Length: 115
Length: 108
Image (cartoon, rainbow over the protein chains, first blue to last red):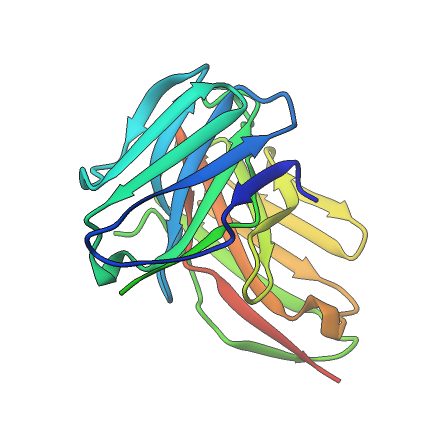
């Protein structure tokens, strides 16, 4: 139990589907993140929300749409994805994105397969 | 130049030996450095953080930081089969940047 919970853990979706990934953190943190991890590639930062404000959008295609209704919840809405979007999507949280020594903690991840 | 570089491995060490993992980073202004361990099919878990030059020890793990050389390393003493995993170096240069990871295999 990491304090960061992601659902679903596994998702298979067609290219025309719309689905969402959900993340909830129970650590009292103020920053939440979405990372993408593809095989043999470094973790890629997608989005950062700090105190519910989006502070980073790392040139992510618009078919990925984040939503952060409060500091404890983060969503990633998915639509018209491509097979190359198949990856492990990791949610993470930390106390404050801009704090020195900012330490992030990951959820278990959501395995996404686009067919 | 990649922001954070690690040897991809795999690094194979016998049980009981020392595993040495290296990481270099490009942003000289970076202040915070982290090592994460990731088992196959699992998410990364934090094992060490280091902010000052020198060594920091935590159990069988020792992190070493040399900001002048832009170099951070992780030593795993008395390696166990349960240490077999991919180790990710991360550098907080305003946004947390990760290396590609070094895969370690501890053979019994």
